[in-house]
Amino acid sequence: MANVVNWISVPAFFLYILCMAIAPWVQGGWDWIYVQSVWDRWQTLNTGVLAFGASVIALNISRYHTNKQRERRFVAAKAFLPHALSELIAYYKQCAKLLQEAWDLFENEELRAPITLNTVAPELPRDHQDIFNRCIEQAEPDVADYLAKILMRLQIHNARMKEMYLSLTQGDHTLVLQQNVMSYLYSLAQLQVAANKLFPFARGMKTFDNTNPTWDDYRNAYANLDFWWEDFQDLEGFTKRALERENAV
Image 1: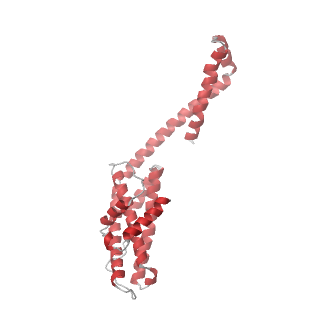
Image 2: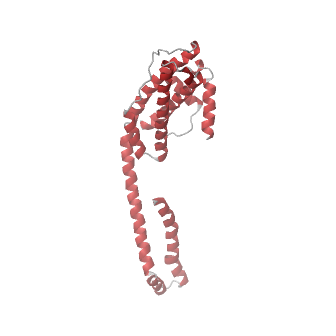
Image 3: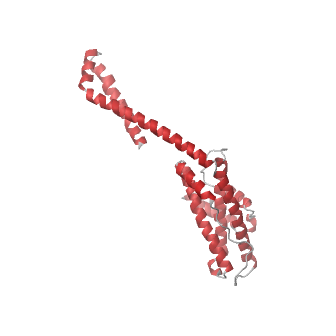
Protein backbone atom coordinates (compact mmCIF):
# COMPACT_ATOMS: atom_id res chain seq x y z
CA MET A 1 0.00 0.00 0.00
CA ALA A 2 2.78 2.41 0.95
CA ASN A 3 4.56 1.70 -2.34
CA VAL A 4 1.42 2.53 -4.31
CA VAL A 5 1.04 5.81 -2.44
CA ASN A 6 4.68 6.68 -3.15
CA TRP A 7 4.35 5.84 -6.84
CA ILE A 8 1.35 8.14 -7.11
CA SER A 9 2.75 10.88 -4.88
CA VAL A 10 6.11 11.41 -6.59
CA PRO A 11 4.84 12.25 -10.10
CA ALA A 12 1.92 14.19 -8.58
CA PHE A 13 4.37 16.24 -6.50
CA PHE A 14 6.48 17.14 -9.53
CA LEU A 15 3.34 18.07 -11.46
CA TYR A 16 2.24 20.27 -8.56
CA ILE A 17 5.65 22.01 -8.43
CA LEU A 18 5.46 22.61 -12.18
CA CYS A 19 1.97 24.09 -11.99
CA MET A 20 2.32 26.09 -8.78
CA ALA A 21 5.98 27.03 -8.50
CA ILE A 22 7.13 27.39 -12.11
CA ALA A 23 4.18 28.02 -14.42
CA PRO A 24 2.85 31.14 -12.57
CA TRP A 25 6.22 32.87 -12.85
CA VAL A 26 6.51 32.11 -16.56
CA GLN A 27 2.90 33.02 -17.37
CA GLY A 28 3.02 36.20 -15.27
CA GLY A 29 6.25 37.45 -16.74
CA TRP A 30 7.99 37.05 -13.40
CA ASP A 31 5.48 39.37 -11.75
CA TRP A 32 5.33 38.73 -8.00
CA ILE A 33 1.82 40.18 -7.69
CA TYR A 34 0.51 37.79 -10.35
CA VAL A 35 2.14 34.81 -8.67
CA GLN A 36 0.58 35.77 -5.33
CA SER A 37 -2.84 36.05 -6.94
CA VAL A 38 -2.51 32.55 -8.41
CA TRP A 39 -1.50 31.09 -5.08
CA ASP A 40 -4.35 32.91 -3.37
CA ARG A 41 -6.93 31.52 -5.82
CA TRP A 42 -5.60 27.99 -5.28
CA GLN A 43 -5.12 28.30 -1.54
CA THR A 44 -7.43 25.39 -0.71
CA LEU A 45 -5.56 23.10 -3.11
CA ASN A 46 -2.21 24.19 -1.71
CA THR A 47 -3.37 23.46 1.83
CA GLY A 48 -4.61 20.03 0.78
CA VAL A 49 -1.36 19.23 -1.02
CA LEU A 50 0.70 20.21 2.02
CA ALA A 51 -1.50 18.05 4.27
CA PHE A 52 -1.25 15.13 1.85
CA GLY A 53 2.53 15.52 1.66
CA ALA A 54 2.79 15.50 5.44
CA SER A 55 0.69 12.32 5.54
CA VAL A 56 2.93 10.61 2.97
CA ILE A 57 6.03 11.54 4.96
CA ALA A 58 4.45 10.26 8.18
CA LEU A 59 3.45 7.02 6.43
CA ASN A 60 6.99 6.42 5.19
CA ILE A 61 8.49 7.18 8.60
CA SER A 62 6.09 4.72 10.21
CA ARG A 63 6.88 2.13 7.55
CA TYR A 64 10.61 2.61 8.08
CA HIS A 65 10.34 2.07 11.83
CA THR A 66 8.07 -0.96 11.33
CA ASN A 67 10.56 -2.54 8.92
CA LYS A 68 13.45 -1.88 11.30
CA GLN A 69 11.53 -3.45 14.16
CA ARG A 70 10.70 -6.47 12.02
CA GLU A 71 14.35 -6.80 11.00
CA ARG A 72 15.42 -6.76 14.66
CA ARG A 73 12.86 -9.44 15.51
CA PHE A 74 14.05 -11.55 12.58
CA VAL A 75 17.68 -11.23 13.70
CA ALA A 76 16.63 -12.43 17.14
CA ALA A 77 14.68 -15.36 15.69
CA LYS A 78 17.43 -16.23 13.21
CA ALA A 79 19.92 -16.60 16.06
CA PHE A 80 18.20 -19.90 16.94
CA LEU A 81 18.07 -21.15 13.35
CA PRO A 82 21.47 -22.95 13.45
CA HIS A 83 20.21 -24.97 16.44
CA ALA A 84 17.06 -25.93 14.54
CA LEU A 85 19.06 -26.92 11.48
CA SER A 86 21.48 -29.01 13.56
CA GLU A 87 18.50 -30.79 15.10
CA LEU A 88 17.07 -31.51 11.66
CA ILE A 89 20.39 -32.74 10.29
CA ALA A 90 20.60 -35.26 13.13
CA TYR A 91 17.13 -36.43 12.10
CA TYR A 92 18.22 -36.64 8.46
CA LYS A 93 21.12 -38.90 9.39
CA GLN A 94 18.76 -41.28 11.19
CA CYS A 95 16.52 -41.33 8.13
CA ALA A 96 19.57 -42.04 5.98
CA LYS A 97 20.39 -45.13 8.04
CA LEU A 98 16.86 -46.45 7.59
CA LEU A 99 16.91 -45.81 3.84
CA GLN A 100 20.32 -47.43 3.50
CA GLU A 101 19.08 -50.53 5.29
CA ALA A 102 15.93 -50.65 3.16
CA TRP A 103 17.95 -50.30 -0.03
CA ASP A 104 20.32 -53.08 1.00
CA LEU A 105 17.35 -55.36 1.68
CA PHE A 106 16.01 -54.81 -1.81
CA GLU A 107 19.45 -55.41 -3.24
CA ASN A 108 20.14 -58.63 -1.35
CA GLU A 109 16.81 -60.28 -0.60
CA GLU A 110 13.48 -61.18 -2.12
CA LEU A 111 11.06 -59.51 0.26
CA ARG A 112 8.09 -61.68 1.14
CA ALA A 113 7.69 -61.78 4.92
CA PRO A 114 7.75 -59.12 7.64
CA ILE A 115 11.26 -57.86 8.24
CA THR A 116 13.00 -56.90 11.44
CA LEU A 117 14.86 -53.69 10.75
CA ASN A 118 17.82 -52.60 12.83
CA THR A 119 16.84 -48.97 12.37
CA VAL A 120 13.46 -47.64 13.43
CA ALA A 121 11.68 -44.75 11.76
CA PRO A 122 13.03 -41.68 13.58
CA GLU A 123 10.72 -39.23 15.28
CA LEU A 124 10.58 -35.79 13.76
CA PRO A 125 12.11 -33.22 16.16
CA ARG A 126 9.82 -30.59 17.65
CA ASP A 127 12.03 -27.66 18.64
CA HIS A 128 12.55 -26.52 15.06
CA GLN A 129 8.87 -25.78 14.47
CA ASP A 130 8.64 -22.76 16.75
CA ILE A 131 11.96 -21.38 15.50
CA PHE A 132 10.94 -21.75 11.87
CA ASN A 133 7.53 -20.21 12.55
CA ARG A 134 9.05 -17.14 14.20
CA CYS A 135 11.53 -16.73 11.36
CA ILE A 136 8.78 -17.07 8.75
CA GLU A 137 6.70 -14.40 10.48
CA GLN A 138 9.53 -11.85 10.46
CA ALA A 139 11.57 -12.75 7.36
CA GLU A 140 11.54 -11.24 3.91
CA PRO A 141 9.14 -13.03 1.53
CA ASP A 142 11.85 -15.04 -0.27
CA VAL A 143 13.34 -16.32 2.99
CA ALA A 144 9.89 -17.02 4.44
CA ASP A 145 8.89 -19.01 1.34
CA TYR A 146 12.14 -20.99 1.51
CA LEU A 147 11.59 -21.92 5.16
CA ALA A 148 7.94 -22.76 4.58
CA LYS A 149 8.92 -25.06 1.72
CA ILE A 150 11.36 -26.88 4.00
CA LEU A 151 8.60 -27.45 6.57
CA MET A 152 6.25 -28.74 3.88
CA ARG A 153 8.81 -31.16 2.45
CA LEU A 154 9.79 -32.25 5.94
CA GLN A 155 6.24 -33.26 6.81
CA ILE A 156 5.90 -35.23 3.57
CA HIS A 157 9.24 -36.96 4.07
CA ASN A 158 8.46 -37.89 7.67
CA ALA A 159 5.14 -39.45 6.63
CA ARG A 160 6.90 -41.47 3.93
CA MET A 161 9.51 -42.76 6.39
CA LYS A 162 6.85 -43.99 8.78
CA GLU A 163 4.83 -45.56 5.98
CA MET A 164 7.88 -47.34 4.57
CA TYR A 165 8.91 -48.64 7.98
CA LEU A 166 5.45 -50.01 8.74
CA SER A 167 5.13 -51.57 5.29
CA LEU A 168 8.43 -53.42 5.57
CA THR A 169 8.03 -54.56 9.17
CA GLN A 170 4.43 -55.68 8.67
CA GLY A 171 5.15 -57.59 5.48
CA ASP A 172 3.11 -55.40 3.13
CA HIS A 173 5.96 -54.95 0.67
CA THR A 174 3.74 -54.15 -2.28
CA LEU A 175 3.53 -50.59 -0.95
CA VAL A 176 7.30 -50.11 -1.06
CA LEU A 177 9.42 -50.68 -4.15
CA GLN A 178 13.10 -50.06 -4.65
CA GLN A 179 12.19 -47.12 -6.87
CA ASN A 180 10.27 -45.66 -3.94
CA VAL A 181 13.38 -45.91 -1.79
CA MET A 182 15.39 -44.06 -4.43
CA SER A 183 12.75 -41.34 -4.49
CA TYR A 184 12.99 -41.07 -0.70
CA LEU A 185 16.77 -40.85 -0.97
CA TYR A 186 16.40 -37.92 -3.31
CA SER A 187 13.82 -36.22 -1.08
CA LEU A 188 16.12 -36.57 1.91
CA ALA A 189 19.03 -35.14 -0.06
CA GLN A 190 16.74 -32.28 -1.10
CA LEU A 191 16.22 -31.42 2.57
CA GLN A 192 19.95 -31.72 3.24
CA VAL A 193 20.73 -29.38 0.34
CA ALA A 194 18.29 -26.82 1.73
CA ALA A 195 19.96 -27.02 5.14
CA ASN A 196 23.44 -26.72 3.63
CA LYS A 197 22.44 -23.60 1.70
CA LEU A 198 20.70 -22.10 4.73
CA PHE A 199 23.43 -22.66 7.31
CA PRO A 200 25.80 -19.82 6.20
CA PHE A 201 22.87 -17.39 6.14
CA ALA A 202 21.65 -18.53 9.56
CA ARG A 203 25.13 -17.99 11.00
CA GLY A 204 25.40 -14.54 9.44
CA MET A 205 28.32 -15.57 7.23
CA LYS A 206 26.63 -15.04 3.84
CA THR A 207 23.58 -13.47 2.30
CA PHE A 208 20.57 -15.64 1.60
CA ASP A 209 21.18 -18.03 -1.31
CA ASN A 210 18.01 -18.92 -3.18
CA THR A 211 19.66 -20.09 -6.39
CA ASN A 212 18.61 -23.38 -7.96
CA PRO A 213 20.58 -26.32 -6.54
CA THR A 214 23.00 -28.20 -8.77
CA TRP A 215 24.24 -31.76 -9.00
CA ASP A 216 27.30 -30.73 -6.97
CA ASP A 217 24.98 -29.57 -4.18
CA TYR A 218 23.27 -32.95 -4.18
CA ARG A 219 26.52 -34.86 -4.39
CA ASN A 220 27.71 -33.04 -1.27
CA ALA A 221 24.36 -33.70 0.40
CA TYR A 222 24.61 -37.44 -0.31
CA ALA A 223 28.10 -37.40 1.20
CA ASN A 224 26.81 -35.54 4.27
CA LEU A 225 24.24 -38.32 4.70
CA ASP A 226 26.94 -41.01 4.32
CA PHE A 227 25.53 -42.15 1.00
CA TRP A 228 28.02 -43.16 -1.65
CA TRP A 229 25.89 -42.30 -4.62
CA GLU A 230 27.96 -44.59 -6.86
CA ASP A 231 26.65 -47.56 -4.85
CA PHE A 232 23.03 -46.76 -5.70
CA GLN A 233 22.05 -47.80 -9.18
CA ASP A 234 21.14 -44.75 -11.31
CA LEU A 235 20.94 -42.41 -8.30
CA GLU A 236 22.99 -39.83 -10.17
CA GLY A 237 20.76 -40.07 -13.23
CA PHE A 238 17.61 -40.00 -11.11
CA THR A 239 18.84 -36.88 -9.31
CA LYS A 240 19.84 -35.05 -12.48
CA ARG A 241 16.51 -35.79 -14.14
CA ALA A 242 14.64 -34.55 -11.07
CA LEU A 243 16.77 -31.40 -11.03
CA GLU A 244 15.99 -30.73 -14.68
CA ARG A 245 12.27 -31.00 -13.98
CA GLU A 246 12.43 -28.74 -10.94
CA ASN A 247 14.64 -26.10 -12.54
CA ALA A 248 12.40 -26.02 -15.61
CA VAL A 249 9.42 -24.90 -13.52
